[in-house]
Length: 318
Image (cartoon, rainbow, N blue to C red):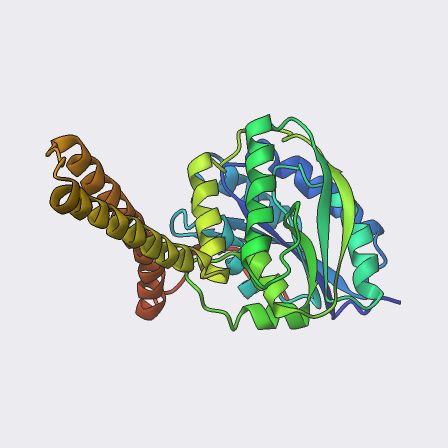
């Protein structure tokens, strides 16, 4: 019999302008978790990440009607990864599910994820077999990014996955000890190790509303992933510097040979301008790469809080 005093499972749901999906998501999650043979209670944690639609109002209504629902309203939009981190900080379950609110990731898969976790795994992530209603450019860029990240890091970050997964309490506590300002949770979870496995599924199209993950945010997440788990860009900048220096040295020797030996040197601004622009471009690229790392170091050194909570639902009675 389930221990009603025990909190067996927490479900963390980041919310950003998801008023069209909150009702259906809550119903499907409730149906799944009610049917699941949990050894205790469950909680649904909705993290409102600065939504400007009616998402927060809907969460207030859900929390008033359903004792399993808790919501936390962040003081502004901090980003998807920070919102998930806020949910992990508040989660009290023996296991935690991370799922987005757009219903592209089916809540019904939680049953399989939880079964794998009960079999002895610490992390069970959902790996996509296919993606519906996503344009070719987004699929190709996502596939290329994950394979690039795997090739330049020593961390076995699973490909074709998002943040949809279930993790044990031990993993949650370990994540709380990783205070990076620029979060890349799927990489951090892979870095932690522990026993990990996956469940495959076909990802559906967004049920309602519009995605908040613009190409700009995707590029920012990609930069966070690369700079958090690889120094390959810094090494590439160094090697590029050596290569350009070598080319410049050869051009200098050729110029001296033409001027002093062959006496057929023809002065011209074209070659000079090309050399200056080429070297300047390489230098700017290298400085930009170094700047990305320094900016992240600076953010971590300041040690500002990751987020602030403006409003939260009352704690459950008892």
